[in-house]
Amino acid sequence: MPNQSRLPNNTKGAANARRGANATDNRFTHTHRKISEPAGDRISDRGRDDLPGIEVCKNCGAVHMNDRWYRHDKAPAEAQSPDAHRVDVICPGCKQVQDHNPGGVLTLSGQFLIEHNEEIMNLIQHEDEKARGVNPLEKIMEMNKDGEDTLVITTTNEFLVQRLGKAVHRAYNGDIEIKFGGDDVPVRVNWHRD
Image 1 (spheres, rainbow, N blue to C red):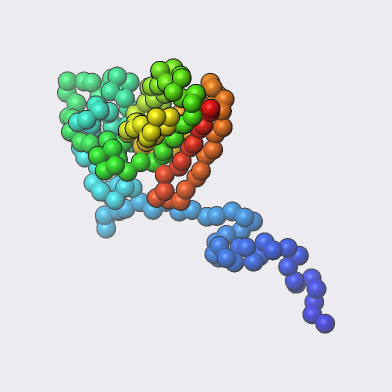
Image 2: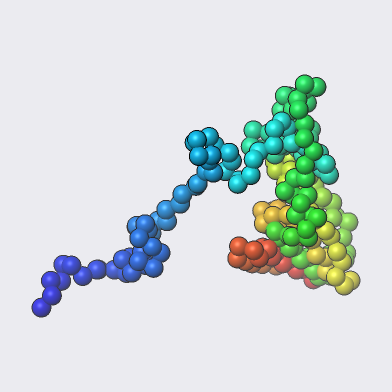
């Protein structure tokens, strides 16, 4: 008879075996690799040479410095210095808009939308402005009517689409559904009220 103490008491071992040798106690290990020159100098963790100076988006005016994007009116004082070297670029948010690559899709529908269209649009614009104050890469890409009682809004990322959907739901109740996709599938938020 085999030694019973050596047999697993639960399925943790099998689950960890499926995840890989480095997984223990239901935790995944994650490594962040930096790209370096042979001499050991760090080039970038994005896989390209960082541009010298301060990057400014040609389209929206967002400012990139110190590994962070700022709204043009909230950029650090050194970014507005006349001595600062500025480079015109296209920020990742504007690039997504150009490529028509949404990170989220919000669908608002129902008779209530027709009756309160102006109020709902004001709420959406207000939430968009608040989100850009925190992260200028969060943008509404497009707003399209799809029939008389349906509005489809695409955003650059999954956080903004959830923020917009939850704000409409908090203000006007109704039914909300949030569907999370895979890596390359946008998050879909559906709100409906008759």
